[in-house]
Amino acid sequence: MAEFEIPRSHPRYVSLKLRERLVKGFEDGLVVPQGLIAHGRGEAFDYLLGEKTHEFALKAIEAAVAGLIYYKPRSIISVNGNMAALAPDLLVQLSEALEIPLEVNLFYRTEERVRRIEEHLRAYGAKRVLGSQCRRARLPGLESPRGIVCVDGIYSANFVLVGIEDGDRTEALRKAGKVVAAVDLNPFSRTAQMADITIVDELTRALKEALKMAERLLNTPRSELKEILESYDNRKVLASAFKAILDRLTDAANRGVVIEP
Image (cartoon, rainbow, N blue to C red; front, side):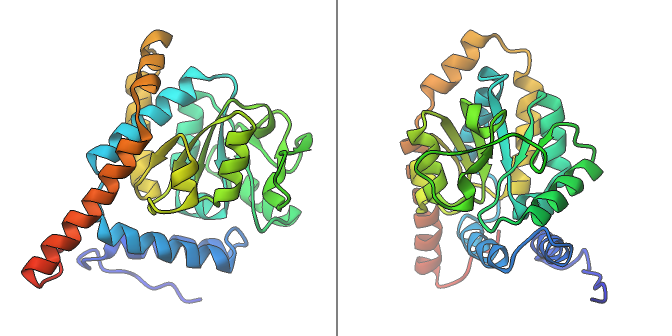
């Protein structure tokens, strides 16, 4: 496919560049067609949220990073095809900064696709990647390929960060006694509702903020990390996300115009 240069002056420049990354990921065998559809659904919610990181998302990001650090060495960052295509650099930076592994976990799983994603992450400097060569087990109560996990990764983890997720795995992870943080632009989704910590934000924006949080929290005493986690209220965060959408739609309805971000 011929490369198309998106003008930086285009009002949807960032959004279009993310789409291009996904298309490239599809061409390289990282992303499946269903992943393109899922991204479009997330874009719709990003429109409703004004394409910005809200305060409620920052609270969730802080809790997620605090959890990743608090539960080390039994923390893991789960990566699917969309995540690998959209933000390989940021995922690797977060993994290396926190010294927490990445694990490739896919719904539309083939060994070839796992290998490609793993190699893609390593090309961006990842040193801690679980996937094609790990000892495997099956997550209880999950019959889909998502249930195939690494023994030394998701299977043994106490804290799992997931993104662009399907709700049945989040539920299975919770039932297995794991704390789950999810990045999901759709606050109505089963993933958002089932997770302990829901980051209602676009993946690349959320990861950039997570890197800032990591720098701030990395040497924080465990007692303070525990306090962040115990004081976090996911129901309030989701309620704030719903209200942000409602307020934006109400304002647009009252004015009769679409509000630009």
